[in-house]
Amino acid sequence: PLSAGGGEGAGEESASARSTAACLLAEAYASRLKEAAAAGGEQGALERRLNELLSGAVLSRAQAEQLLQLLAPPPAGGTAAARGCKGGVGGCWLVPARVSLLSRLERQGEALALLVREGGDPEAARRYCDAQPEGQRAELRLCLLDLYLGGEPRRVEAAVALLRDYGAAVAPEAVLARMPPDAPISQLAPVAEALLGRSSQRRREAQMLRAMEKARSVQLHATMLSRRAGRTVITPETLCSVCSSRIGTADFAAAPGGEVWHVACAGHAAADIRRA
Picture 1 (cartoon, rainbow, N blue to C red):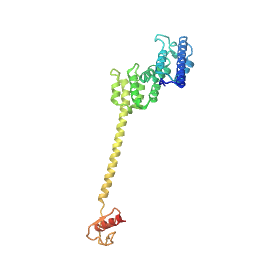
Picture 2 (cartoon, rainbow, N blue to C red):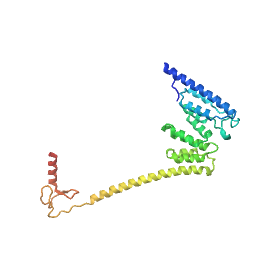
Picture 3 (cartoon, rainbow, N blue to C red):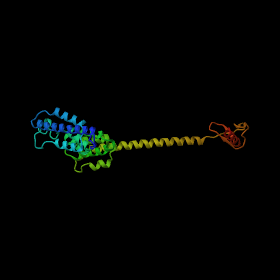
Picture 4 (cartoon, rainbow, N blue to C red):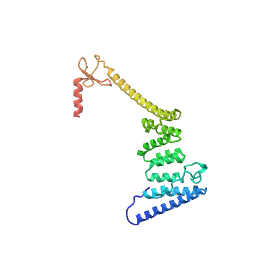
């Protein structure tokens, strides 16, 4: 994290001293790493120590900027060993340390570009997006899609995997706008298929929801019709449940359970219940 700066007292002075010491130690590691790279020596242990130092150090913004400049890769014309790359693979100089510093400086787009272009691990860029606050992830994934499809070589497989996993959170028009117009159909087809597959899934989910709503509506309508279709048959022997007199030809009310009352008796019974 970056320190806030300012303040007085022993605590602030102690934190400032630790920050300065960490910065000086990181500078020393960077110098030794460049010397080891130029001589073709082993750099793994030094790089691990540098990464561990940066992961726990509290640096000011100015210190982070200074270290980022010190950790800049050697000239592009140098040998693979001088650039700190194993197996002759170019452009992989101290990627974790530089990404850490860029993240501290809130330069996430540059950190993603570094992971994609020099890191050599597509999953590392996705993990970086996942580790950011939720409100920033969608924008960073679009940035990552730009890097996959806009750079050379185009990383179509990585773009397809990204869309398959996170396409639901990305607007289709935003994806289409990022497709290079000069790219061969063979390269863009998998991207379009992943995008259409996600759209088809959303459409199927919407269809299922509409079908469930329609089934519920039909069920309610059938219940209403069933209740309306019920009828009560009054015979000469049918008695009022309140006064026990025959219903005869008088007005009556019926309950779903089959009980019937004279309308007048039902009113008296309701009044008695209210008084009770």
